[in-house]
Amino acid sequence: MRKAVSVLVLGLLAAPAFAGPGDYNARGGFNGWGETLMTNDGDGSFSVTIGALAPGSRHNFKIAEDLDPPNDWNNNWPGSDARTAADGAGNITLHFFPGAIADGWNPGGDRVGYNDPGQFGWEVTGAFNGWTDGVDTAARQMSNMGAGLYSVDYTIAAPGSYDFKFRESNSWDVSIGGDFGNSAGNANVVTSDPNAIVRFELDLPNGRWRTTVVPEPATLALLALGGAMIVRRRR
Image (cartoon, rainbow, N blue to C red; front, side, top):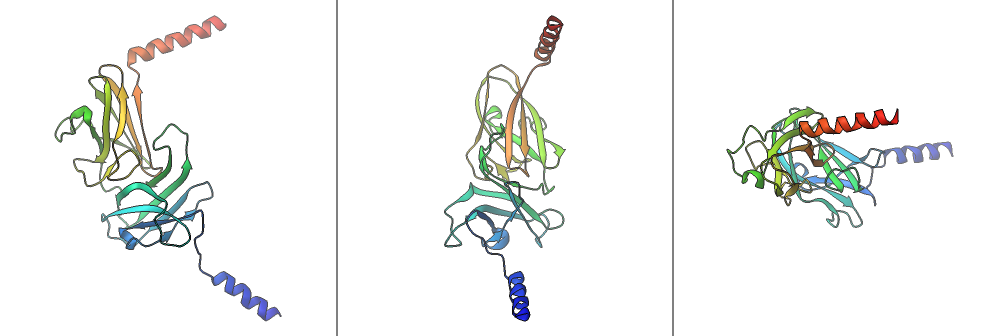
């Protein structure tokens, strides 16, 4: 009986991991659009590292929910393929955050992100500069804030509603639209004042972006003065 139990235990330990409902696969050019099961990170997110790739090689991909039967595309994200590059070690690390997320960033859920490959810079371009290469080239370059976060403060001259995208600096080979897909619809920003300073932020690992109108120094001074007056009145 003991030998039979030992064999059974070893058999269980050696059994391969099968995906099931609620599991997710990475599918892309790096695996012939097959299925690479993602790891449940225990915090509601999933991740996987694809290795042994040529450093700098670029790959389209999606995240697909594993359902029965397998190898289906019933639920997949983002709407269009995402695209990134292998890092210097030949790795691509992907992340997926399923469900709705209310944190003030976009998209509002089912986010697909990836570790910064460190292979190129990022910029914003859109209707506010006519989508034109060579216009405000330096002003629209994003600063690397570390950990895959990029940011730039860009002045939009006239009030209005403007479509835009994030993209690889001076190239459309890799871009990010509204849902983080490479060929996704445009993102959008709305300004109400002339010469509004808009902060564009792109968070690659968390698969999210946002825009924030930055208050002018005079407005900040007034807000600070108002706060000080309130404190004095309370005293």
